[in-house]
Image 1: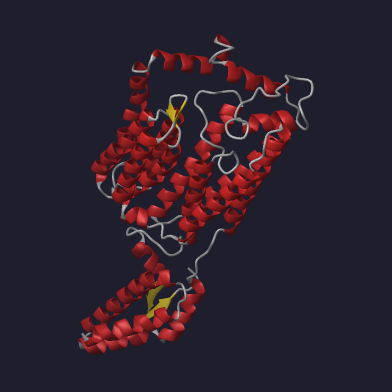
Image 2 (image 1 turned 30 degrees about the vertical axis):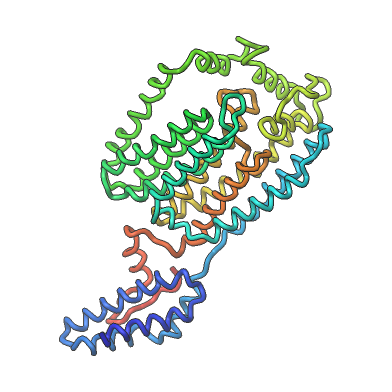
Length: 450
């Protein structure tokens, strides 16, 4: 008991020197493990336990010095470049929406845009300073709570063109919740993959009840990529080829089953989306219109000699923002927006690839793929291929719930990157420890340059 108190006192003194409190638990555990290991080594040499503990603590060095050195290396590292790019996208969205309001002669949403930006920043800050590991600690609670909330909103939500409006945006949260489920299933073999698939089904059924094909496509593709990522990272501890077959065979069969049970109007919509000329003044009208607009657009400047789009495009600050900008300002507007979005995506991917721990990798992958899917669906729709309706162009198109949720997700991703040097998975803890602490000639060497 006395020896244990001495170890605790040593660890307490070390941690008192480290300002980043979230690092205390990890550092204490690693130091304690090595003190115990060294103590056991001394005992095996014939020392008494209390003497071995005393000597092991002495070999660790002055606790104030050790703590001061660890304080220099253990600091939260914000991804300032991504925070800056997020701010750029948010401000760019406000400027674009105000320009559209002024250019189209409708009343602007200046007040609403500012309030939306404030709430979005608040949501990002909240997620940024929360400990993202709660997604891995309580995945089922988060998953089933989201399902309950979404069903409640689905029941009470107003319907627009036979579709519940608000639940389709809440679906943006489910891929990250699914990442937590996969983390919870790690090392459970093929059973973990099968149960992950079962958990996938329930939100997919909610998408069908909304109904929202865009939400279903975004959710399904994002979750499939997350599951593939987990398999490639050997999260389930199974043969990768067999795991891929287990996932992708049902995935390839499912579209044929859905196709067989589609209603006639759904089949007609699919046909007209692929070939809008079949119904140019009906189901194919918007596809034909957007294609004519971009075909006559200039690289810089207003389309003065092509189709007159005044008043033709609906929802120009939500669903058809890019098409409107291409028409009024030229392709240069599209290029600038896509360039900024691509820089954000590439920078996020680089940070995601660097993730060492399983949970951080799964969460950051789920968020950036979710972001990419929203952009792809929106861009394809605005270029005249309107197979499914867009949800939002993240942070740029007008949408209160979509913007707040996207900012919240970006905050979670930034939280993952912020703590990437602190948290490690159980699978990698021993490897990290060996790099930090090494035995040389009977002494413990602390590598502060990890």
